[in-house]
Image 1 (cartoon, rainbow, N blue to C red):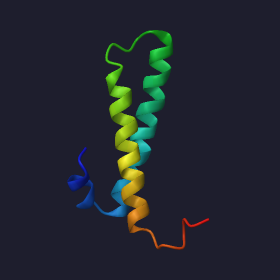
Image 2: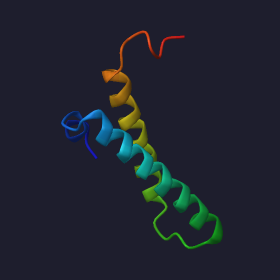
Image 3: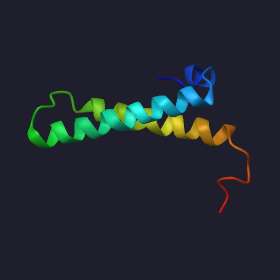
Length: 68
């Protein structure tokens, strides 16, 4: 998923997408350990999508919320 696509989505939809991607990643990792995964690049793609979604959500959040 591209950043331009993520910018058009509302925060609630991004959170749902994040949850779905995390579940998909968990399932792929489980399948990888059991030898069922043929395309290991899919794991890398999902990790990058998760990072993009988190970045977009943090950009929309108020500045003080995630500051340490």
